[in-house]
Image (cartoon, rainbow, N blue to C red; front, side):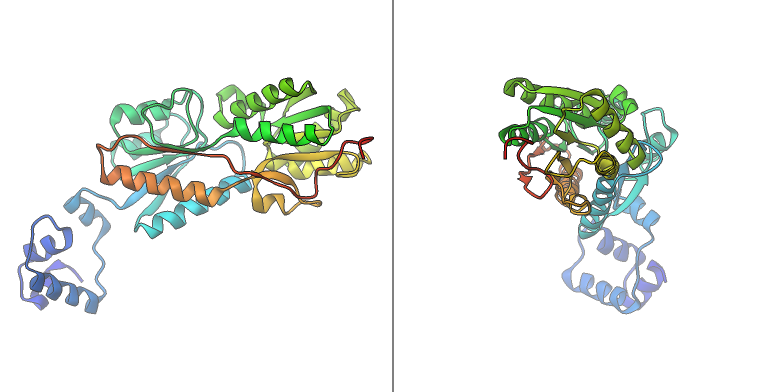
Length: 338
């Protein structure tokens, strides 16, 4: 089925059908209804490439993901799913581009060939050449996170500084004086991952304000690394009674390490952090955490991008989210404070 057949059945020219579909030129309401009726009867769907040529839009957005390791974390998968669902609600498809830098060929094709109308960038770095490149190209984009100079860009992010500080304050209020911080892997901090650096800043600043004794650790994104990290924490400072983590993927290993060491949560050791809510509920006992609202992040990012695509001259906007800590069963008074 093609435009020619629709034109024949509707009794109009091919160009009239094209104008009715694209809206580039006005057609009478009666003609538009007649064309639409034929389209509905035939179940016609315009060819995506032809539609893009006709109206300059692909109705596709790119989700640019630089792989952080050999697997995606639960939080990342939740976010990807939320973007796909939110995009569908706006009649957009999603093209996943696993790109890491502005020299990456996949990322370059996304821009040079205009395969998408705009892009959402995950895993933002404090100094991110992808963001710079998109800005130079005036290509519609929304970042998940903030660069060191976020002015002039569109972004949605979590206030990791405030969230980790809130976790520290919660533990300090429970009487914990020696606390560890379990961050993301070494290579991500070297790369300048925004969430890891801002989370570390929030932890160290809050700990200094409360006069706490702390140690910070960089941990691989998997359970074995989490267990190894926990063993190191107890080896280097056996009097540690609590930890804060940004590393959702290592959480199961941290719990296992405590169990192997004979430390019961929360009687002997408290655990808290910043993770997706449904993952905080999968461990036993459930994790007291600042729940990452992945669905909200994805929805807001898509809404901002659709707005930017539709209004290229609009002033940049952003959303900075600070979800409250959900109190569950993994934190309690420090030993000796009950």
